[in-house]
Amino acid sequence: MRYETNDYSVPVSYGHRDVWIRGYVDVVVIGCGGEVIARHPRCYDREDMVFDPVHYLPLIERKINALDQAAPPAEWDLPPEFATLRRLMEARMIKAGRREYVGVLRLLRPSTSTTCTRR
Image (cartoon, rainbow, N blue to C red; front, side, top):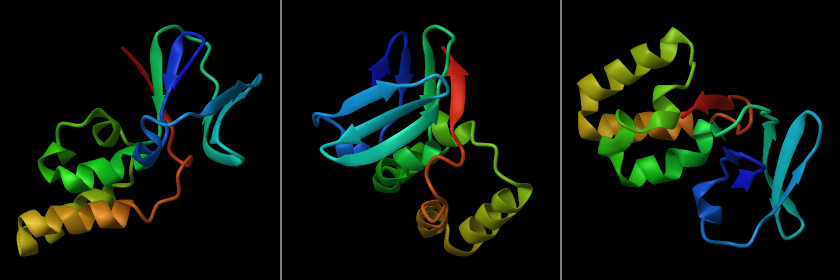
């Protein structure tokens, strides 16, 4: 979703749906109907993308090879234990290990890891 000059992510399940967006001094809130679907810190830079990597995980789960190329997970600042977990899961289950790892990431709550990226 674009608000002023920046893009803000929403869960992929809300793609191509009518949503509303409200900008406040410190936060941008995005909703669909009466439900809030995303909340991001407001970015006052220009032409930035503010995203929550959790929003992209269902898509990456379907296209598992995109896990290493997709920008949101690549710029996700996770504790080093997550890299260890991924390595162990992939060593034991190969491609299924990647899918299981994404399943673990989906357990993380949205809006705890919003990232602002300059294009």
